[in-house]
Image 1: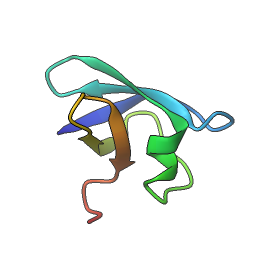
Image 2 (image 1 turned 90 degrees about the vertical axis):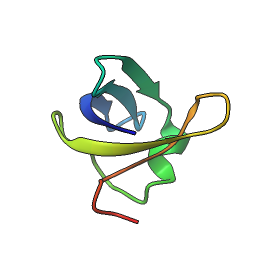
Image 3 (image 1 turned 180 degrees about the vertical axis):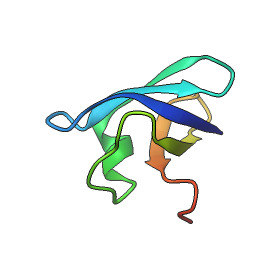
Image 4 (image 1 turned 60 degrees about the vertical axis):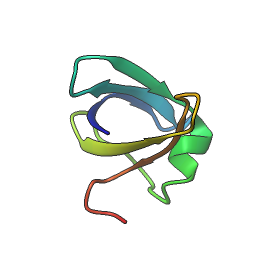
Length: 65
């Protein structure tokens, strides 16, 4: 699933994504840390990986594997 970064706090490494269907989806620091990224920009497109319960486990740039 993909979305856009709506908020990102570099200090807490967490934020809020706006999915393509308009749903807001918060992500925790461990999901950001799992990406290997250093920073996210507002409006940046991201790919979201979730677990079986729907919790965000990884946020990456769509071009990353």
